[in-house]
Length: 63
Image 1 (cartoon, helix red, strand yellow):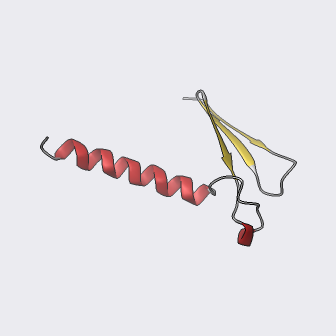
Image 2 (cartoon, one colour):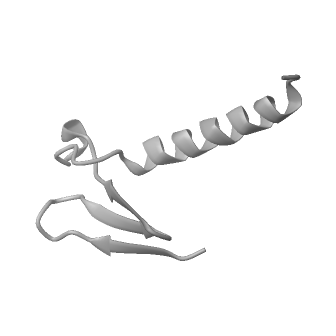
């Protein structure tokens, strides 16, 4: 899997993340110094963990 991260010079904290064919804008909230142009890194981490836990629970539960 290929992951590339590029700094967006037009905004104070924004980065553009490329994962395979997907593009994700990552930024900080206004109170963190960003402009909320995307989820912050911690939001993405939390979302990834939540999705992984959901998949694990879904596989264990009977249909």
